[in-house]
Amino acid sequence: MREAFKKIPEPLQRQIIYRLLTGAAILIVSAVFLMNSMDMLSVMACVAIMGFCIISAFLLFRKAVIGDYVVISGACLSVALTAVRRRTKMITLHTEDDHILQVMIKQRLKKIRAGSQVTLYVAANVPVYEKGDGHILHSYLALESN
Image 1 (cartoon, helix red, strand yellow):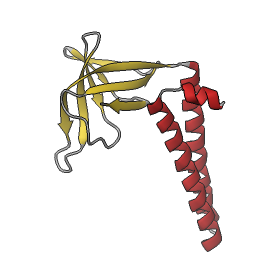
Image 2 (image 1 turned 180 degrees about the vertical axis):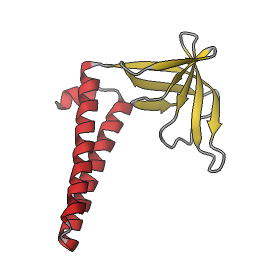
Image 3 (image 1 turned 180 degrees about the horizontal axis):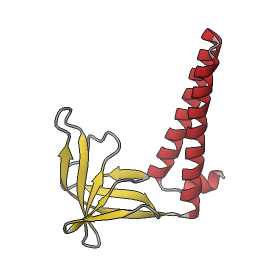
């Protein structure tokens, strides 16, 4: 299993580790809740969230090992920011096979600039919607920018 994990691309490895660490942190929080207040409702909620994180990490690991993802690379044409906090909301990519792809960002990204090279790891069954002369992608597994 360790060899299979090493064969997975590094951005997907980071996502798997992040999900496992989140599950472990929530396990610690649930132990603190249990020791301090004996509130079983809070403990059960934490255990449910921990289970979700661990199952999510396992499913991502399985998807990465069997190769059920697509790698999309391209140059970032533009970056759309939110109005108030100026966080990245959407990026527009010009892919290597001459398509325009708008990607809705689901995490905080600070280093993506127009002209930078971006690699997306997308599940094979994710829908891609057409909009005008390009496409829109609402979900991805991992994102790497150079």
